[in-house]
Image (cartoon, rainbow, N blue to C red):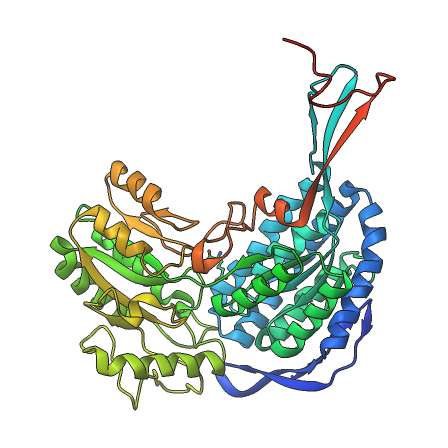
Length: 502
Ligand code: UN1
């Protein structure tokens, strides 16, 4: 059944000026949704509507807003399987992972519903007698949230849930190719009791979104931009927001390293590398980019890793597989272009994966989708494109090192800084790695991907501007601190000037 969906602003369907067909990447002939695309004016109008609605929403007591978050969590939980099936169908994410992704929304609601009863401010001692100082967390106003389609529901919830509990209104622009999943989640959120106009969903292409956002920023109807996507688009968002003296919350790409120390449990490391590199077909921002393996264990590791890669199940995402297809044709095209580029530069063959210009695709009975072989490229040089660039596909490079300092230098070299991992049994090495790595997230004896929903999530360098999502930390994105002083001395006490002598 093909769904027909359009943007909804202030509870009403908004006009479309174009359409987009969201297809099933595992069965390309299947259209999952016909999506009406809005233009820049509709985006800007949605921001004005949100601004109107936000005033009332901010006046709803925070504990009551927390109760709405609780209802969202319950509704999502009650519809988890249907939503996960839709995610699997629309972006080809293996069902178990899709269900995990829906679980992550519930976790996020569980965490933030209590924030409705906290959102703590502080009382602070004054320099002067009979004077009280306070801090308050105020909502920012309207958040424009622009999200990627590889995590079409969990990652948006990291913005939506804390922004809502803090009293903000939202204009959400999901990726077109995951529009049906996003829309299903939007409906659950609204059904849980959000007043009209507090959460608006706008489908639009990149050009119209940028224009609409620029207009809204100029009109003063957007006060925070949350963006998850490529480093390239993140930079443009950052520039645009900077011109309006705003700092966005950016969650961008990664070239996430995994260091294998000579004392590592190699079987555990192989399992971690397999999931990190090829789970979700390598399409998480936290996916493994490069394995940095100690020279002494390189041969042994490659042998075991090759075997694991060879045995990995790639196929129908509705079944129990490590990975399904790539998300969408545009990612498949970009990935193929990448494979074509690296082929003359590397000898890529052997059991670990084959790239041939004529057949990088993984073909099997009944496959009519964007399936690719997992590819491992050994002996990658640190000045190489495959070492430096995010590929967003099922390809992992391997390089070697002799000292931990060298491994850390290699791990930091691409200039991203999202996730990282080290496999070792030596606590000192683990802590030295943590200290030296520029990534926002560090795993020890665990995958580069799979961060839990209540820890700070985010990156540095090309992975983001240091903003953090998830857990308590994201509240600093969606609230602004306000300081208040209240003098009840009955006279004008001047700060710095009337301070009692010590
Ligand atoms: C992303 O790919 O944008 O840590 C986010 C993880 C997931 C989130 C990935 N919880 O792998």
